[in-house]
Length: 359
Image (cartoon, rainbow, N blue to C red; front, side, top):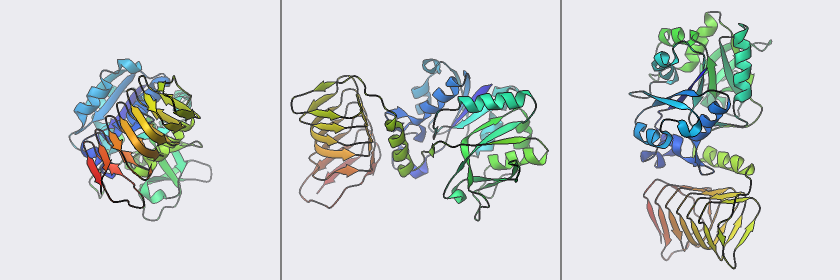
């Protein structure tokens, strides 16, 4: 099998951060979301991976390289514009060269990886029981997703992309497994009303052609990290499984409670860090409280402030902020400082190179 990771989306729901950074490279627990996808595919025994890239192609290439650091061989597939998931499959046809493959959306996270799912597909496909496998999860707002309708026997009957009146609460999770029959389907379908080639239409075409599409309902957590709330929840979930790492310099008057991972050269001065928390290399905390479910990137400086349940990217500085920062996503090289006025609360979503003066 081969792997296909989609990393060409614009990330409009995470703006302004994604004006200057690929959404797949926004970190969860100080690791870019895209890296979780690559690691999951490699862990499933798949080393040949194609990554579909768009406007952020250079940033993705710089971060991933040739894939050798992950134990993979990466080929980049250019998509001129976001034309739908089925279009991404279409441009990967030559790369796949007839091999079955797993397609993974680069901004998704799935509990426990995909090794068991890939093994299941290999077994089913090997004995001719299916041509594709889709992952489904029960969601509270299925109208925001591709939705699957199953027969009483548990077979996939119908797939609809973002239906106004869903007949099921089973949403398509961002991992799919296909064999070469999918390529005929992506060439047969027409663009949807929003002008994209929908993967739901391509899978529906497989069903209409009498090919077996096997559903697998995911019982663990799954997150599409395309929105602030989902990104923060994914960060919380990953940090829940954190093991305490090697400490940096814990100065006099500082204290660490719970599971905290400190990068090399982290300096704590008169500060309290209450885990689960991960702090990147070279970061300095002084007279600061860092609460649970916080990820702080490398080379940050936090002085006289309180932060929890937040993601702070590298090279940012927060000083003399009188109220706690909570539920925030703060980009690279951001500065937040206090001036005179004292508001009730702060909540930030800041892009790279921002500067906020608290008045």
